[in-house]
Length: 140
Image 1: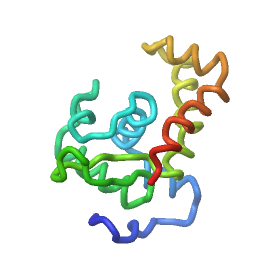
Image 2 (image 1 turned 135 degrees about the vertical axis):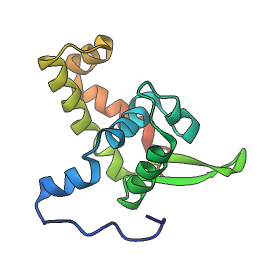
Image 3 (image 1 turned 90 degrees about the vertical axis):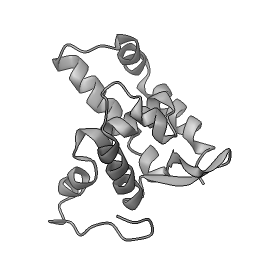
Image 4 (image 1 turned 120 degrees about the vertical axis):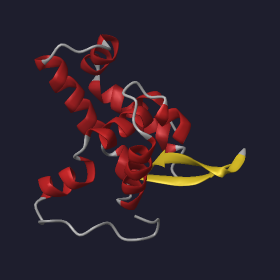
């Protein structure tokens, strides 16, 4: 999906369907996790993520997230051939959703990164405020 084109037509007008069509695969959610929690902003950083995303899938998911207005791009000031990725306000609004998904999984499955889970559990609102603050100054 080229930048500037509208997002694809949805199969239905159901709000849950809209969410699933935009975010329904694991790679999109993991990219957003890495942006929100790890501060990733470059293609190279995403490639180095724990789960080992393939380059073609990463490129596709970044284009899709941009087409849906969840992330935005700008040229890297240090190398104009590269892009810097940033969450939009729409993307930042996903922070509570991702937080709840983490907490849900931690309640029902054996998971790692218990320090993060404990931080979310201790004061979810403070955790979310910190994410919003971190990205607020980066929104174009």
